[in-house]
Length: 360
Image (cartoon, rainbow, N blue to C red; front, side, top):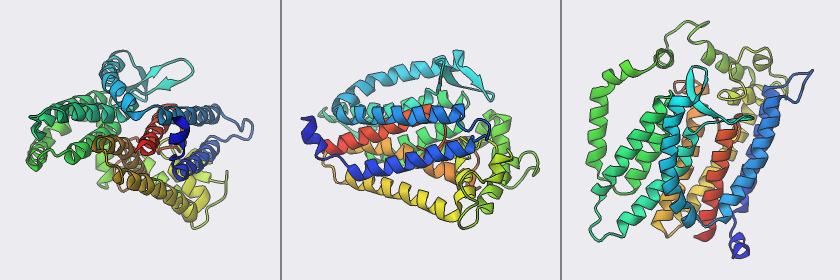
């Protein structure tokens, strides 16, 4: 059975994932490089994250996606409990409770939502479709689940991940046939409540929005984005060369190994290197998207779309925020940024998608 399914494995997407991951290893090595201790702890953890990520990839690919979907439906309730636990007992870092300390690594539970909410959604939809009196209005339950989950993540606070969850959930609701009027009502209510919601934002979140609108001191509030733009612009066409990026090496660029790793790549490999990476992402996303469109199973399409959309949104948001096209919200670049949590979830999602493709 496994051999027969492997005959339909999408080797091209696997190759693209491998190349992007290799670029990520080089980027983290450069971002954390020190001549005295060249192989930093972050680089070693990234290597471990990539290696274990491929194991997770093949595990999720081999197991029947229908079984994973049923299991994921019930796991999602556990994920919500873990999110509540994180708010109470989570590890504090950079003023936020987003992690659970597991000793050698710190795991970010909100990443699990990106993996298991599509499973919860797809299984719920499948069970509803089996009822003779199914109507799109039955999806309203999923709206409340989605909003409650996003609120738990927002309270950590993690605005970026909360927005990714909302975007992906909204897309799935749209594809599942929820009537347009509900989206209009939600948008109108959101616009009316915007001034109230502004009051619930943390001070640093308000500053990020005002900075995006062009306000703030160059040496204070605008420091991160200005240094990122300097790093990107100074790379020119071909870049300064591997390990030669001055903005990162002289520690002008904050969070170079995580949120702003695309700026590190642009400085060292220039416009051509950045374009090459963007083409790799585009090739991977388009290939998987086309494969998903070719499926006959609607539930499989919903599940695969939910898994892929979070990766696509994360890529778009990260690159947009480091170039100043969106406010800084702290979203890692998939397969590139340092961080074991997002690596594991990204590999699991991609392996799950490839497993769905093989069986459809």
